[in-house]
Amino acid sequence: MSFIQKILNVLNKNSLKGNITISIPESDSLLEYNRDEFYQRIIVLLNEILIVKANAKIDRVNELAIVINQTTDRNIFYASVDEIENILIELSEIEQKLNLSQPPSEHLKKFRNAKDKQIALLEKRISEEANAQSSDKNIADTQNESFDSHVSEDIQEGLSVFEAYKMLEKAKKLSEIANETTDRKEFYDSINEIKVILAELSEYEGKLPFISSPSTDLKNLEQIEQSQIKLLEKRISKNKRLDVSVEQKEASDPYKDYYDRINTEKDNNLNLSFEDVEKYDMKPFDLKKPFVTDGNFTVIELDGENLQTAKAALILVNRLLTPYNNFYEKPLPTKITTDYILNQKLPYSHLRLNPYTYSYADREYPILLWLSYYGYYGNEYLYKINFDKDGKVGNCDLQFYNYTVQIRKNNNELYVKKISETLKEPPYGTKVLYVNKTKYKSNRSSQSFNMNLYDVERYAIECNAYVIREERKEQNNKYNLEKR
Image 1 (cartoon, rainbow, N blue to C red):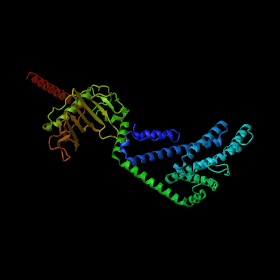
Image 2: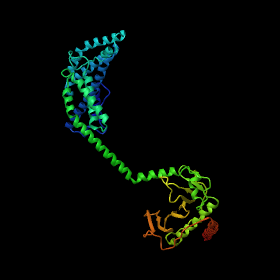
Image 3: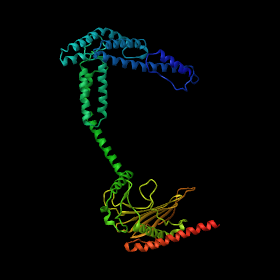
Image 4: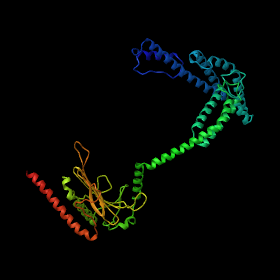
């Protein structure tokens, strides 16, 4: 424990009695101060202790004065009187250091002079309560007869200094509300209540030690009331402009609008029935299948003809990428996994139904073919192939290994718009390998995809043959590696 901290402990013990203490950081020590700074520090700390504790004692006197004015219990009354007297004696001993406007010794003298009158009021309250002969009004008047420890014996009974102080504090808070509020009702209620308080306090001018005249304050309030009303209207007008600007900012916030639309669109596409997508049936997928949902999407499992159609779509998209094989070194995906993801409610690959926009309008691409395959090393590929209202392939977003491909549609023909690679080694980031800057279909090979029911069988046979060839190539590669 530092030397200063030890002195503080002595000061705390030998100053005013109470629970409030003053402390300093553990880092303070005698070595950190020279002699003058040391004594100045002690003086400052002592003043802090005295002021803080004196304020706490004064608050306690205020509480006990209210008890004395209202209680009908003799034990409580005399205990409160003794405690007030002890506090005032204690404050009187250090009143020169506290620098109060009215010395505690003077309050103590007036308190002792008024004690007999307060005892008489106590006995009167006890008698009236026991006999229960007076009316409710008389009882209320008796209970409101106040004790004032700050003024002489000839002060009119009814309002103490403590009660007047509380009324002034309330008027101050009401004035702050009136100066800041933008609510007209709150403003006028506050002004009217301030007037009532000042009018009541005006009756005690010359009897209570007011710093300023309540009657003068009341006149000043009436004079500036119209100007305060004008300021209120300015605040209301300014607040309205701010509200409008905030609304405009929110309306122009692209992120807020985007997420609101996404959430609304998700809600619109949950709990779908066949009637919602009947007009898209057999274009080219059979939608007369059980609907599956995970709370976020409504999907249809890929099986039978739908699975064959999905395989055909995969092959045709791969054919569109074939002329660009010099930009990627990996083979294109050929497998479709229809198993369910572990601990998930949706299969790896499925047909996702999105017939509605956020405003319940028909989407340009109501059907999304979601194809993915997970190998031993994570997500090997993800193809998102959109189908329009007529069952034709539209925009596609493809990911396989480290490559990302954007396929777009122009003049009813598909073209590769962009190919990029995500670098997993320094310098990391994404590197663009190819981009069609004209934003029109590429001059290189492009294909459209217009499938119908008669094409399904032909594409299915072609798809199976392609898959068999790719599997044989893979087996031959493994065999050659093992042989080496």
